[in-house]
Image 1 (tube, rainbow, N blue to C red):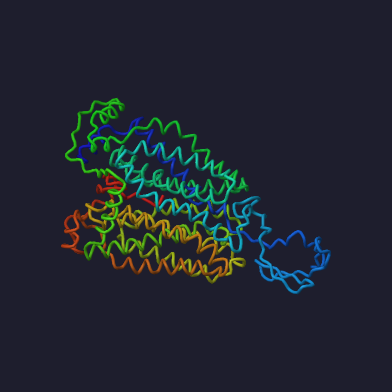
Image 2: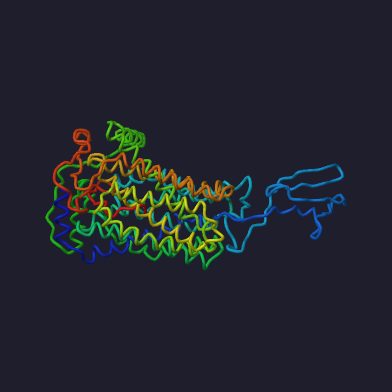
Amino acid sequence: MVSQLDALLTHLGTGRWTVLHLITIPYFSVFLAPHSLGGAFLAPRLDYYCRVPNKYFNSTNLSFLDSEANTSHSITLREECQFRTDTQEGEVIEDCDQFDFDNSTFSSTFTSEYNLACGRAYLQTSFQSMYMLGYFVGAPISGYLSDKYGRKPLVMAGYIAYILLGVGSAWLPNLFTILAARFLIGCLHFINSYTTYVLLMEVIEPKLRTPVGFMECNLWGVGMMLYGGLGYCIREWRLLQTVMTLPGLLILPAVWMIDESPRWLLVNGRHEEALQVFNKMRKLVEEQVPESQNTHQYSSVWLFLKSVTKDAFVLLRTPRLRRITVCIYLNFVVQGMVYFGLSLSGANISDDPFLYMVLSGLMEIPAYTLIVPVVQGFGRKFSLCSLYVICTSVLLILAVIPIAEHSTAVLVLAMAGKMAIAAGFQTVVFYASELFPTEIRSRGIGTSTMVSRIGSMMAPFINDMVGAAYPWAPFVIFGLSSLLAAAVTLLLPETRGHTLPDTVAELEAVGDQTRGPPLMGCERDLPGRGGDGATLAGDCRC
């Protein structure tokens, strides 16, 4: 059935109907990047000073007057979170609950507005991590809803909800409701990235899948660059979040005009609706009858959760598959941690965090493009290990270089590390798609993407909490983690030139040996982000 649909799409070519999808869906990648990295400008870590309560006053000699008791007090800062007061009753140590933040770069931030310092500093870091936690929770739910109710309804609902939450949460008055909204926005990320990707792969002809996949990833980098420019122009966090969300309205009318995936309609037995979609392309199409309906249907949330649990254990069922799963999971955790760790390190590495964000996005374009011939020529395992080693070397050098004295060299090294880890992210997704057998490939990629968000949630805490005490420590943690991932990758088999395994039994029987005729580059049809037959050669973290 898949081959028949691919032949039909190839015959239809790329007309106005397909171009509408090609314009509409990749736009999501540009739109998502600012929210995914929102913590960089909306809730950055800032320098701060303890604000002495108003009842103590004298600006010249650290002698303060208590207006209530009309007695003199000598006040000195004991540490950044406390101050010591010498009174007639003796020495009193008080905790700071108000702070003066450094607003030389940002006029207003989530951090300064809610006094997120000292004992409340973890809430500043949580602004970024809550988004990643939402992604972690929303990914499996979105995949289930997409398979059961269709791509288009979920995309439309997710896109509208994303815009409404993005604008609305920018003006919420309460700290915890803002964090809750960040969680919900993160839950919608999977819909607006992976579900839209699946829809796009299902409506274009096979020969365009790989270049379109790369185009979508490059647009993610463009979104990062635009976010850097917006952040430079708008220094007030609520206004910045509103402005970076509103462009989503521009493409909203086109979202209503795109059609449901004909592949999904046919697999689910909705033949007449599929024919209407094909007729909309002004072509005559014979009615296609699916060979089987293998889309999972769940009658209740309990059965869905039971199926998810079963799928997770399937990936650990046999020795070789268990080794692949554990190694790939660790790779994804490290990728998520190091990628977002470097992306959010602008304030630590550069005096100009906006320029850092623009350059960081710019590095992703050659990373996603130049790595393709390297992977094809030198193999998946060697290429991925080399990228990890490059990233490790760069990060460990950054840990020992004085940033203030060698700012240009530090920025160049950081960009080299960012390009290496971005290329590694694309490589590990493609590598994983070849390692997991066909019968469980979608589950393998889906759960791997999910666990990568564990690393993404850790990255802000490593940058802000650990880095605040030991500025060199995040680079060491990220560098050694990359080195560990390189070592673990050596345990995986090479897949270049090998036919992909279709079943777990084949994987276990043949092992690491060459299995038949070589792959034809990256053009083999692989079940993509939803078991849809889309190649993953152009897949990426966006």
